[in-house]
Length: 258
Image 1 (tube, rainbow, N blue to C red):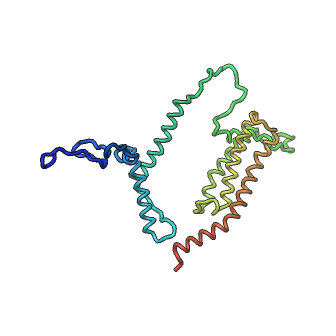
Image 2: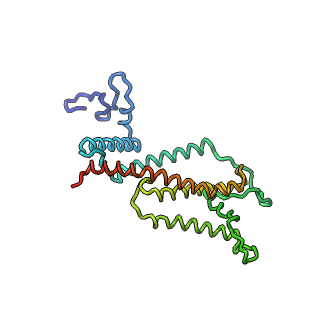
Image 3: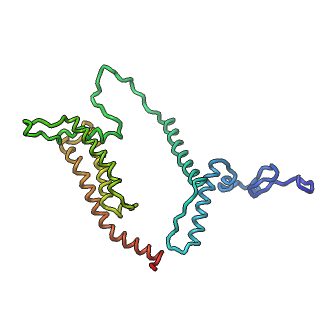
């Protein structure tokens, strides 16, 4: 009831009065934005986050005197929390959907009395398993009568220690503040070469399943990473001069030297 005793009329602007449900104007169907404005919970919070971020970014662009946009930081709550919760909810939903629609096939139980023809670790350990198959690189010393100084298995374990140690020490060797590969072509080339080596050494670990000559595969395992690193370094080195020129020009245009 209103102050004058009359009954409130339903509003047609998306709101409600005294518990009376909102109705669209006339016989029209509410738009997606109108329905979104009346939702609650995580969906509403996510919508408000993106709209607020877009609005603040638009205001900052219109008020800024710089040519490029300023760096805008958002607080952890609710901006970062809502965004991360939305992304996590999406991927969890996708995992549940795939597990419900495409369940994994369960084969027959393993026979403990027979050894499988091919024994492999999990796919993300193929690179480590491939380092255990570097038998041709283990030298046979003439002073020992053609014998190897260590067993092939021990040689593979030491190869794992060398590779893991190199990966662990790289952050201490590269102390630069570059954020783009073009700013430091050498370390970018090292990274590309390492990724390619991880892929090729993984193929070497499953050489019985790869339709390729074993000797050729062994040569490509160490040749392709070097080629990929050299090509990456050459391309980024060529791009660096133009990148530096554009960066300096943009910097001095934004903040002229005093």
